[in-house]
Length: 315
Image 1 (cartoon, rainbow, N blue to C red):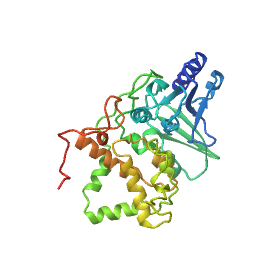
Image 2 (cartoon, rainbow, N blue to C red):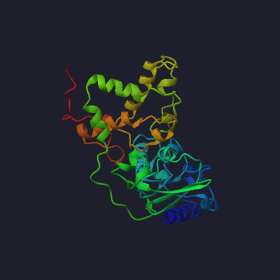
Image 3 (tube, rainbow, N blue to C red):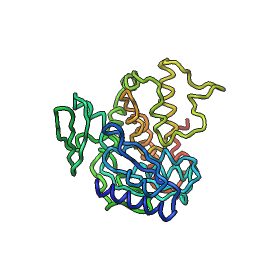
Image 4 (cartoon, rainbow, N blue to C red):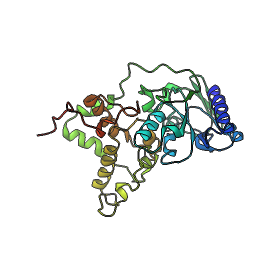
């Protein structure tokens, strides 16, 4: 990861020195372990604050929406797919972006690590595929594969799909993984079992909207949950309102979600929010052969019409 960090700093400094961009968006160390922060830099000297490791899980595509500047941005595979969606949906132009592509081998799930360590974690060090976790009076070494985010463990697009330059060699894409294994389990359930599964899944939702705020696709000027004329969703913890929020938000992401995991990472209650969007991703792939954000040259599955589109739903 040190090599990535050095290259990112070098590229960012050069872009700003040559005036090719007005700012570079990347990451810096967070104030607590496993929580790196987004960083906007505008001078070459600030490039030394940029870093890259397995805790750069935030999706930086969030920060380019409707901006007017020329922007350099650090992007792993899922980030780059969201940048493609931003370009397709006219939230930014390709000419405004200088994409610094980062081949990615996955991000660490801080929830998993915290669940494994009872004491306070004060430091984390990476070395190859090993992660050393330490704190007051303890030290433990883990394999990175043991604590990957679930979306990273099943990711089949680890390399950026669009970039201007890379910080390292492309990594092998994973094969033999089934990103939709949990979806298939739910699909095999009876209607009553499915209902109970999702009721239990969102039972502890506190409607903080962290999943929405972290999602790079949620950039409607006014979210449906905030509309008052008409009011689509109540403000209480009524189970119907909680269901409505999760289901409608998922459908707003249909055909657009890159499965970056930002929603689950942000959720303070540990809700597996991706169980909604993964089902819709699977349907888009099986019905239309569509995966979000792989090309700027095609419209999303639900944004276009073909004469041979499946129409079995029409009765």
